[in-house]
Amino acid sequence: MPFARHKQIPTDSLLQLRQRLDRLPRKSPERARQVQAVAELYGVSSTTVYRALYAFKKPHSVHRADHGKPRVLPQAELERYCDLVAALKLRTTNKNNRHLSTPNAIKLLENFGVETKQGLIKAPKGLLTKPTVNRYLDRWHLDHSHLTREPAAVRFQAEHSNDCWQFDISPSDLKRIDKPNWIDPSKGEPTLAIFSVVDDRSGTAYQEYHCIYGEDAETALRFLFNAMTPQGRRAEPVLGST
Image 1 (cartoon, helix red, strand yellow):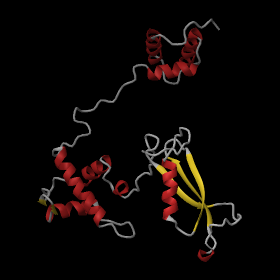
Image 2: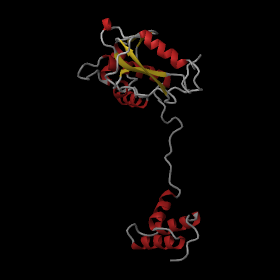
Image 3: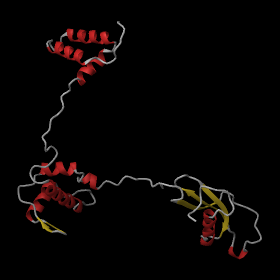
Image 4: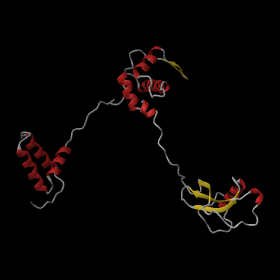
């Protein structure tokens, strides 16, 4: 095999190869030999040559200048009618997910119209057809499957530190401790809980242990005050807007 100096086949070589292949029958074994000769000349595989031939002057689909735009009436009017048809379908959906069909929705819009904030809207008879309405309902995502689809869950995340904290009070895994003198026996046995805040952006956490009796708002506020105040500590990333 000759030394390959070029990994990319020149355009004129592809053009000459295409002309030679066009003069040969479709099932002629000479076609494979011609492709193999070009592959050996440029140090590439036959698959690379076939791929280059396929991409060489590949015809592109040509559309009208108004491709994708409705021609039966202006796009704004068709969008309004499609909105009404989609609303009728959605309004008539039952528990079995059955709803009004597109032809029946068009007939209802033509014969009786739909009352909106802008007044009664009726479509001219014979203007709307089932294929046209269904095509643009699907193109504009107004079909029933898109309208009834649950929105995608998007996790919120703060843009900067201290924009959002996640506050939590959880019973501590440390079940028993020596009872301090300040515990009031009349209130029962307190719960050892861990108070924590986590910065939503950086993930930095600040925690404290407290003995509480049920939901203790006073202790929670005292903990938040401690979390937001430097109180002689070194510079920490979790400090409130003080």
